[in-house]
Length: 145
Ligand code: RB5
View: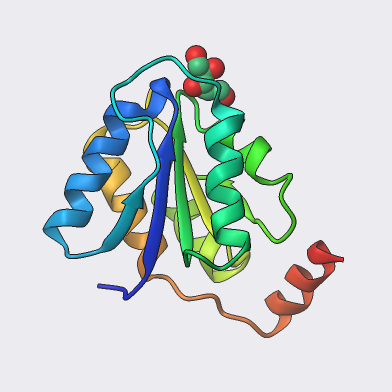
């Protein structure tokens, strides 16, 4: 597996799936830190999205995973932080391409959208796929500008 350090977080809509992804990390010796929520309590997703996005943008973690009910709100919020390329992926092709072409640094998913096995496949592919660089780097640089 990859040698990355991942920051993971969710709101109440993503709590159950977050716990599934954490079990996957444990089984596969993937280093991570959980920034909550810790018990499914109702919370506002922009708060956790900003927290994880800043940790990744400041290089305190290599990559981030954010889970809410749909996967959408956390992506919209995380993408407000400069340097963040957050993508919502509910299929493995998007997961792969978001790394290969877009150098995504935060993956978001909806706990009310994908089942646990598909979600783990999406995470596995997302972590294993390297950014291809080259012409894609030029385009990513354009996004940053
Ligand atoms: C919470 O009900 C829900 O709105 C949130 O988890 C997320 O899906 C927002 O985009």
